[in-house]
Structures are given as structure tokens and as C-alpha cells.
Image 1: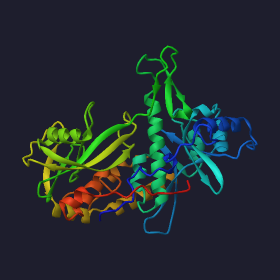
Image 2: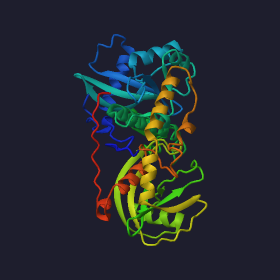
Image 3: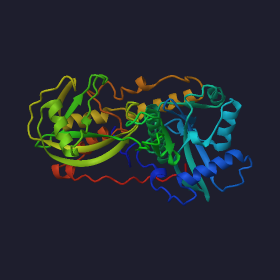
Length: 407
């Protein structure tokens, strides 16, 4: 069945909504100073701030799972640990722990207590993993957690957004160790929110990388058929929207028209914006893609597939697409993923990669299926299917991100 979400997966992160001014105690710089003070002050009585740390290993956040009595099964949670526990883990493993290895994620107020959230990459600290293994927690692929997320659970969607931001930030730090201008090492600045070249003659500032991608549902003149493509890496029966990276000196609308022409030889006229989605689960060389979604109207119909880009591309009727959405078993895939995450956290399948288990999301009766509700492609396709007229499809309005949560 098609799924309706209030907000795109990885969007709606409440920690990113507002950054305190530099003079505010919760600002990145002052919060880091307070944190370093607490590291040397075991009593932790010098500040009213509370700190929570989210460890990552090779791009995987620490997570736990709680069994429930609902039909959706277990629910996963981010594995936040306190600053004191983080310090204790490093100390027990004989590893020096300094505030410089933490990266600022944001802040919130919980029951009149100000909390500052941090991420840390422990990929190089193998001795820490024994400590984590003794608890019912596990480092789990973010894509796996994405599939295991209950889309009706606002807290789970918030956790996913926070984890996505943290992963993108840490991956960016890992691939920007050296200055692209002079080759010298870069050092974190502003609690990890940017980096700077260590060469006194250079001192270039480097900011987190975002790679914009246009993703478009191309529709015929009558608004009865949609152009969908298949890549060679797709599992059988899976189809999706066309997409491509934006080139320098190109507008978003121009990128939509160029990519559609290059991949299918279809000429596009009118291009209408739909919504956008951060996508931190792409290649590690691109820490966070920004998927910018569009509806695009075709001026031609004859398809000539560029085999270097796509395996196939076809026009699909609204009726066929709607039938496929009705047969798709997205909720079943979510429940299955949630159970396996729970098993991993309890040590039953610890360390197992589950990505391949989540590819086929439709029953045997469906002739085709599409990316799950966590992808903007799904939103584009379902929005078009559920609209009754060309005007409605193009004028579709998205609900603003409305997730509010205590993390």
C-alpha cells in the first residue's frame, strides 16, 4: 500500500532548526569550552548543561532496540551515551579522550535542562568495541535503520534525521582531511562545523559538502503516463524516477531537461518544483546529496535509452503505477527490518549487513515496484498518481516539516 509521510526521511531535524548566537552558552564554541571543562571536572557541577554523544563506526550510528506489543514490532533508538560514560569507555580502553574529537550537532531543552548533542567517530578505536558489545547495542548501517523506521513514529523520524546529519558531517570530515588548495592538513573549527587549512600561508576555510541532484517524474502531455527508468544495479521489477547531478553553471530546471534528454532523448518543456530531501545514504565520497524533486512535462514521446546511463526506460500508465503501489508491501519490509535490527542489537545477527534483504518490497502479484516511502522518488510517484488533473499535480503543496521531539 502507498504510504503518506508528513516529512521526507532525513528532513525535519529539530537540532538544526536554530543555531544559538556565538555568545549563547549553547553555541558551538561556548558549549565545547564547557564540555572540555567537564572532562577535567569529574563532579560535573560547573555547568547546568547536559551532553549526549552519539558514536559512529565506519558511518554506522550506535543504536538500540525496544520490543513492543504493536503490530509494527520492535522500535530502534539512537545509542546516545552521556559524556561521563563516553569518557569512561575511552579511559577503560586506554585511549585518550579530548573534546576535539567531538562534533557539534545542536541543542535542545528537555524538562528545563539544556542538552547539547555531539557525534564522534570511533572507527579507529577497536578496543572500544568490546565495551559496546557487552551492551544490547550495535553499530548499524543508516540505510538499514531507514528501512526499519516506522514512518508514523515522529520520534523515530527525528532520530533518523539527526543520525543522517551526524553521518554526513562525520563522512565530510573523513574526506576533507587535506586542503584542496595547498595540500596541507585541515583542522576542525567551530566544534566541527567547518574546517580550516593548517598552513599559515593558506588558511582556507572549508565548509561541509552537499551534492545537489535533480530527480524528476517526467509526465506526458495528457498527464496519463509517467516516464520511469531502470538502472542495472536495480533488483528485478524495480523502477524509479530519472535523476542526475547538477553541473557547474546550470540551473535546476536546465539540469532536469539535460538529464532527461541525455538518458532517454525525451525533450522536456515545463518544469515544476515539488520538494527536496537530504540524502546521506549515498556513496561515502558524497557525504550528503540534496535530492531536489520536480515534475516535468514531456514535449516528445519517443524513447532512446542511453545504455551507459540506464538499463531501460518506459512510459507507464497511471493505472499500472497505481496498481503496483497497492500491491507493494512496504509495511511488511519495515517490520522485517525492525525485527532484524532488534536481533542485531541483541547479538543474534551482530555485524551482518542487511542491505540486500530490503530490496524486494513488493508481493509476487506486482509487475513492478518503486523505491520505498523513505525516498523522494516514492513521494513524486504517489503525488502524481493521487492527483486528478494536470493543474493539481503541478501545484501540489507540501506540508512543512512539523516534527517536534525530545531527543
